[in-house]
Amino acid sequence: MQRIFSGIQPSGIPQLGNYLGAIRNWVNLQADHECVFCLVDMHAITVWQDPEKLRNQTLTQAAILLAAGIDTDKHILFNQSAVSAHARLAWIFNCVTRLGWLNRMTQFKDKAGKDRENHSAGLYVYPSLMAADILAYKATRVPVGEDQKQHLELTNDIAQKFNHDYGVEFFPEVEALIPPAAARVMSLRDGTKKMSKSDPSAQSRIELTDDADTIALKLRRAKTDADVLPAEPAGLADRPEAKNLVTIYAALADLSVEEVLARHQGEGFGPFKKALTDVVVNAIAPIAQETTRLMQDETHLANVLRSGAQRAQAIAEPIVSEAEKIVGF
Ligand code: ADP
Ligand code: NA
Image 1 (cartoon, rainbow, N blue to C red):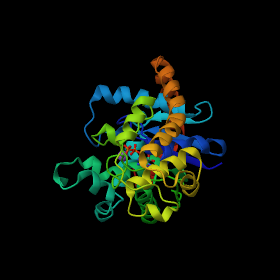
Image 2: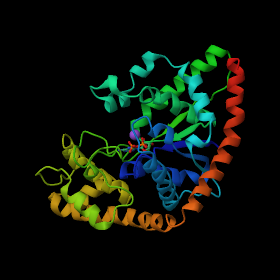
Image 3: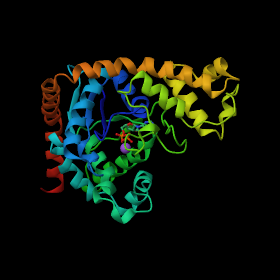
Image 4: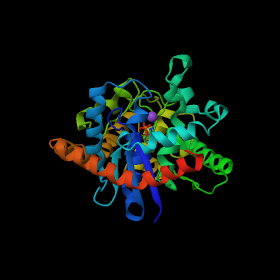
């Protein structure tokens, strides 16, 4: 059975892009993989986090993942900072990766914008910590959204350079598992930006704990154009907001974009947004309800994470100790 590693930052409530790009895939992959799922709190602090909020969000996120169907009887769920192997391997990888490689990372450029000098060194070396997260488990498959594709290519570059420099065949090649549909969900306010839980505007995203009224309101206010829905996908070219809403509908209703358009062609966005609201509420309401139930027992959630960390540690410790031996520690 192949081992999967994947992570999500506890820097807010997971949003629809996290669900379609990652979490829904995680749930399905559990059937035939050994899964290690991680709340990457060390990645979260690459930008400022209020400590109390970070602690709370870590528990909330654990609840959401359990509610979405992560099965911790069979698989591992833990928070990153609880397993020191991540930090130790990340340091080794910081010394393997080249500045030129990091300079090419578009996520850093997107997040830092023009104000590069005022961002943390952690945000800059984020991809080498991500490589360490995966390779501390020698995981071979990583379910992620499309925004992480470049980081996974860098993971393979780092692994290859490590193997080459030290003359070993130690770290395996890693494969990105990017969902075929809705691999990149866009902001509801700006069709050129990805939906993100760290976007300052909560109107830009659907959160997995939003209730039906909130979802309806956010979709009603979502940016669109004045045109009607076309009959063919080609009619969505150069209409990023319209394309995004149709893509979300298709992904959540398990339909193709063609099928959605066949049903709704000629409709304006008023009625289409109503239909979309039903589809989103149907998908998310059960998760939100179960999350509320699970949040009533924080001790249980903390125990789930603690036992997950022990199981994660048992896998990562021998691998990272061996890497340390290889570099001469
Ligand atoms: P965020 O940008 O919301 O903070 P994370 O960095 O925590 O997201 O990413 C967690 C997972 O969700 C990753 O696998 C990432 O690829 C996926 N993901 C994040 N945003 C989107 C999006 N807008 N569309 C598709 N997948 C996404
Ligand atoms: Na992110």
